[in-house]
Amino acid sequence: MAKRVKKQIKISKFEKLLYTLAIFLLVISPVSIVFSKATLAKVNFEVEKQKKEIETQKKTNESLAMTIDELASLTKIQAVAEEQGLRYNNNNIKTVVEDN
Image (cartoon, rainbow, N blue to C red; front, side):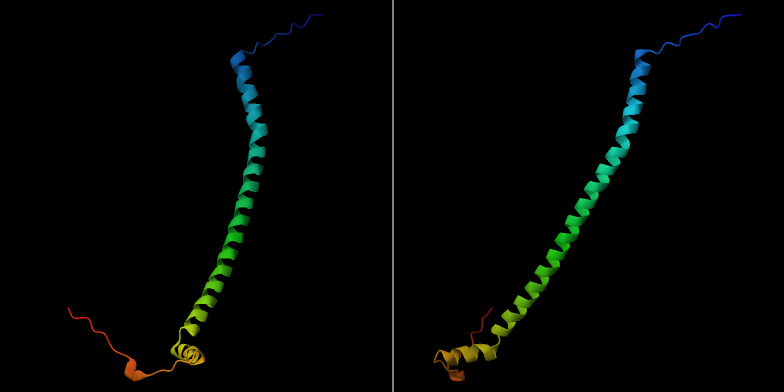
């Protein structure tokens, strides 16, 4: 019987480093993808939350603007003036004109 001689292949330190790096990247890649997608989902959730708050604030602002317009109307001003004992006299109103 002939003995089989096993030939050992030597791996250099550089090759070991490359293999280790490749395995490390194969393990880390899926983890980093999952982490980045989770972070993106969280950011998207915050963006939608902020959009909803902005819409709510816009509605509040529109409501307040309408209230201001109602309170600044001539009839409302006259009603408040009458409550305070004042009356509207057109003869007391003077028009100021600017000359150029």
